Image 1: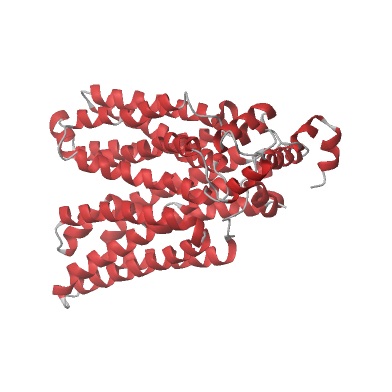
Image 2: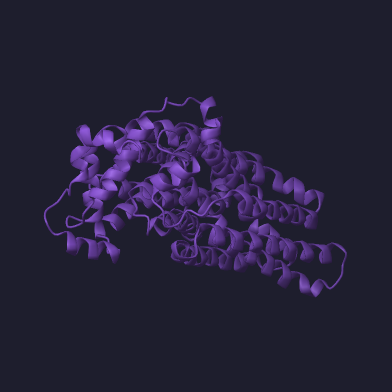
Length: 475
């Protein structure tokens, strides 16, 4: 790198020396085997408790609907507002998440998010009317929006390149686990008890934050080189030689400091335009392909097709968790781009199966085959989404933005994601009123365009350090 010679004359010269004793042969061997200490995995687990909280928020409204409406005497329109206001809170959280994570750190942002989530659940628990219920839902939505940005960013920044994909994918795994957990627990507990259970992941997160290190890359960006090395040493193990990784991080941060600090419009300069296009484009592909419409109205889709909705929803929830876990195991072996292409192809196929099922139903042709075709289509759709399109856009977003624009660009990508989620869920019933099979043909076409975008625009990011990726993409 062109700045190395200057650094040798400056304060960072010591970064080129081994930061721990004389046992390099043993350490190199350990590093080659990629044996990472328990602290890396413990830190990741604590962070993705925020992802579980995210899922618990999204999964709350469905099992609680009948009981809340009965206990508080709410109309369907009032409860619909309660359900949808979560997304507006998440959009506000998305806008502010980047600046918060840059100013107070990744751990600080998770604390802020946890505080809003705890406040929201408590307000919901004590609610006796629609106004406090909506306020509580808005607060949990805000916390969810911040979590959706900061958790994958933090995990990507602490993970070694050989494990980054799998560890970051745990974000999506915990989201679907939280949503499915809320759905299942909510069938046996009251809505107030379910709100109290929503406090558990945030309590674990807040306690765990006392014991885990801050992101080494954020510390380096803030000029805290010594703290950055110490955090890296904790994450890699006391016997690991972190000198090369620490130097690479510091070199890259130093090179970024030579650039003018970008404002909002500077994000659209040629230097950053490719990474912004990739990050935002993947979020559009993820949301406009129909996922939130299918998720929110799975039971209705099964009912329309003549398949028992309770059975279908349970199969759906289990499949989502299992396939997301498979995707996490494969992402660092198969790569991000191949899994995205497999996922996109499966989404197109699932939409076509479902469209054919509703076409046969509408035209009263081979109606006996409709339930099997519809269930096959929905399960292929959700399985395909879970193995790639669900998690990988968040993984790639956490990898491609350079440190000096990560807060701003990440906030934009996260905001686009939440706006897309609202747009998809809001328009789904209108589209189904227009045409059952036409809706899924439209989603199939959008997912086909997503495949084209992935082929032409999205790079493979596996096996490279964040600094290598960001330098290549934003050159």
